[in-house]
Length: 304
Image (cartoon, rainbow, N blue to C red; front, top):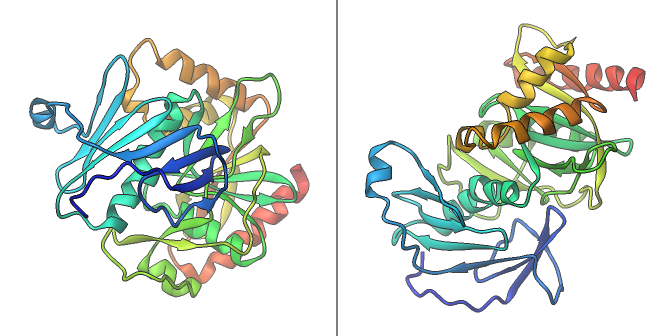
């Protein structure tokens, strides 16, 4: 990464319903011509003394006014409600830096904005947001890419930001037109990327999906919790089990203080008033991904 830390906010984008002005180029995002910014992303020196925190094997620190995220070989990030300051490590590759910025760091920013942030990838099926949730490596992005290849627009990848403030159906704002895939999934799906492949979090890299991207807020109607199984199968969950899955897959749940957890529980309860949650068992073999699409389409045809 270049050592010069310029603060020329000449790059303008849009993601998650927010106008973004940035010092660094973020080609994964949708360009914008906005004059006003909801968030600025710029380079600077993050002055948090992190040595003691690193000894606790944590990659974050929460203060009254900001959340800090940091990794030795990546850099430090100071996150406020209207800005992200980046202090990159001297040798970090710019693709890897963007991967962390647009992933963990930006998701943390969305939490500060009061949104419910959930580990999931989402596609638009007949005007409704359908989310595929699960921990890293469970196939969220690969499943979303399979639906994309079958003509369904992508809404967001890896995490979704849900507006649950109103007593209405929860709404998802579109993320950005990229899916983060492993080399194995990219090869199977026939994806290409402009940049060399680098090992980023288990060899994952962003693949662009510009041809079919959902650009407006849409209602969240269904969440599938991905699990591995011998065959493709859907198991409906009752409210207690569904609630636990929402809490378990809430982004940043480990960062919440005891006083903040009730807010997360309240958001989960509101979502469950209007959103069905089911287990979606999927086989390990990518060759059977079309079976997954078929049973989801059949399930949704009965419920939407």
